[in-house]
Length: 69
Image (tube, rainbow, N blue to C red; front, side, top):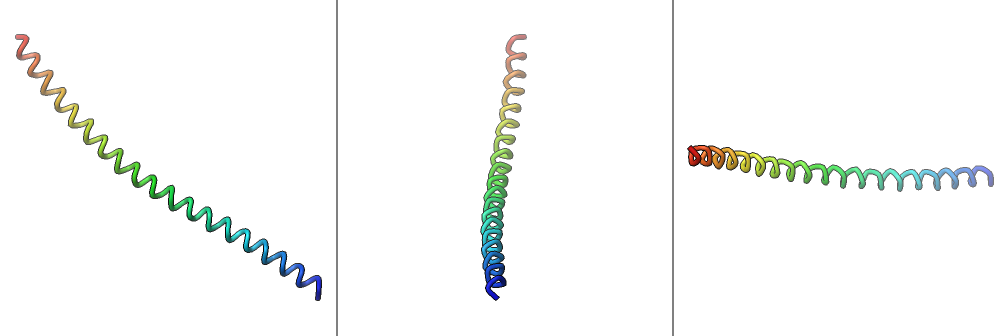
């Protein structure tokens, strides 16, 4: 009987360790997913700003060309 309880105790310790590692990995994955979502939003905002700057540059170039004529 003593051997079985030692094995059982070892199995419980291993299971607990695996559970803790799994929980930690799950939390890290959630944080990574949130970070990815924030990065996507920021990238979209930067893309919009770049497009606006392109439009401004095109207008300015057009005005400059007409002014130089």
